Image (tube, rainbow, N blue to C red; front, side, top):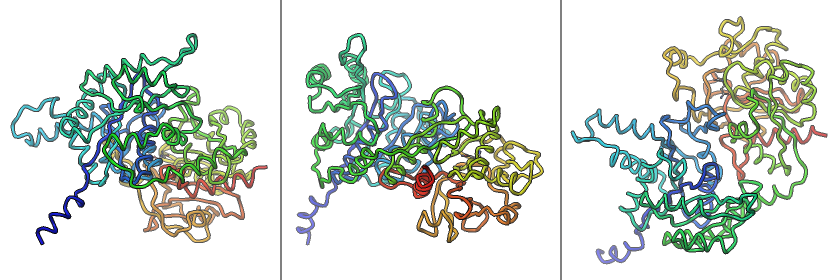
Length: 559
Ligand code: GLN
């Protein structure tokens, strides 16, 4: 018996977990998050269980208190953790549902170490930045990997090599490599500029980035070379010689039209095989991203467009800022557009324009659908309410997300129920008709100025009403969706609102919280709002049913 066990055990022994650190060189904003997500997807397609983590170099304990117009969207995980938009990319590309174990900031790491010190967990020793901070980072990485049972973990380090802020995270990567020399790898996502006056792709900034990385004790195993154009052989050779890396391990990453092209592009340079070779692994299967590729091709081929206007309160600082603040909404629209065989055409419409000049509402006719995303506060609100009214009366498909649902209820109460001053308590604390009111558990938190991670956050179940647009779209009676809000439809008004014709087609299982509002299809092609954020659970492979239903209605209505 003993013998049999002995012969079996070598096969049974699971290969040790591999860790891939992704760091950025030369400049920020070159797509480290998408690169991380794409590497993950490719390694999954080779048959491995992959997970991902993000480390952000901020003092903020989480991303919940950061302004989205400056930092980009706050992505809410299933467990309610408020994180960076890159977590959304990981989930969308890899089809994962990540937990709070997969995200950390400088603030969180220091907070934990300080709390441990206060609890005497360091046994009276002097607690120091090195090694205790990198050790806490490593502990967190290993815990996340253990609970997700991954074969390969990809860890993205925020910021750029050479910054003061992320040095302790690089130190964690270096220490891990010392501890597990055959299991820890690093990837530098760098940028190769093509200065217009020179007209030639330059490798020198990347060479400096590698040297800076070397000075932290890390030698990259791969370079993902971002640029306008693909790298030629000469450029790859230059990088190889000067950065002590094999030419085949320089992966060309030219600009692409859609982020969903990135994994396919990486595979043109055989990223998957190169990575597996270095990790000492063999492909367990080979599907060559076929499902993914089919979707990408479908999207590429569609020639017709569907025109959607996004109405909100925006600073006039250029489209870039808006699109970063609503990245999950944009991606969910793209996924649904692919499903209905169209390309999405988006316009950002400042609701303040309707407040100064109501005639401009007419311009909304050019859109096949109008979407109002989540938001906070009073600015631009009256403009949004009048846009919603226009959509309801003129039968333009309308989709409201969170605040977009609350404002839809306010508009209905004002125009149809004739409650002229109906409002949300968020904006008007003394209204006679607070149709949107604060959630009871939120009152105390606001009073104590306790703002961080105190909203109704994360995934909650809801039950759908049969015969509704929502039920028809989901093809299910029960759903789980992610939330991030302080206010809700005031229970005291629910009876009146429904009597006036607006249907609450999804509620919390106990029937107390209103989760979806809609008008019957007989009255309006699509007039629907969700108290939750459906955009957090959509992907190219599995587009969100409500986004698909919205675009189907938009395509049908659009001439
Ligand atoms: N401001 C609203 C609330 O707190 C809506 C929030 C949102 O749109 N995410 O309830």
